Image (cartoon, rainbow, N blue to C red; front, side):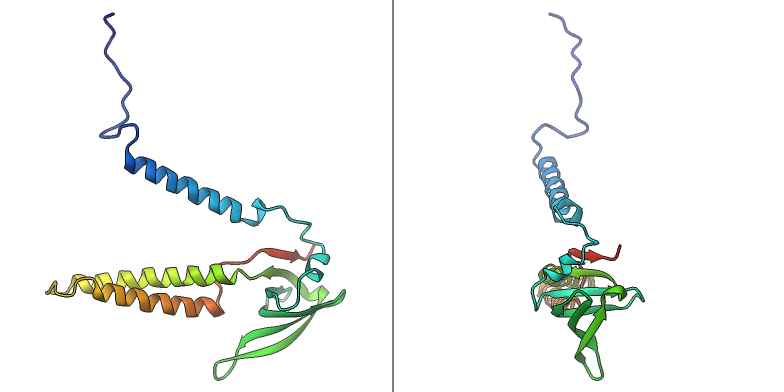
Length: 183
């Protein structure tokens, strides 16, 4: 009956069922599952070297094409043939942006991706909002008055989110799923 009285220690102030530890553990597990399932290797795909993947894309698909010369064109797919593809590329122009029809030969294409437009826009907005909130909080921390606490931070967060969204519209933050890679 006289046991040694030793028990396993869970570390300082950590007990089984600690809500902070289980919340953090769940968040890490969920993030890991999302990244695993969202990655191209986590999804079943056909051979990326098969040109038929590109030919199966519907017209008006939002794609990104990288050429062997390292040029990148983003835009709306017009058509795909056995010899190449045509897309309406959204490009810089003066002033603003212009849409140009690009006819690319199959042998000049290195990679084709479907654009993850919604995910990229959300990521851009989230990054912009985070940066804006950080700047707003930093500026607000120097204020001598606590009268409108949080208003400046919220304003900068909204403005940063809008700016991040606009930037991500033309410069995608998240790459889409690979459709074709030159073998």
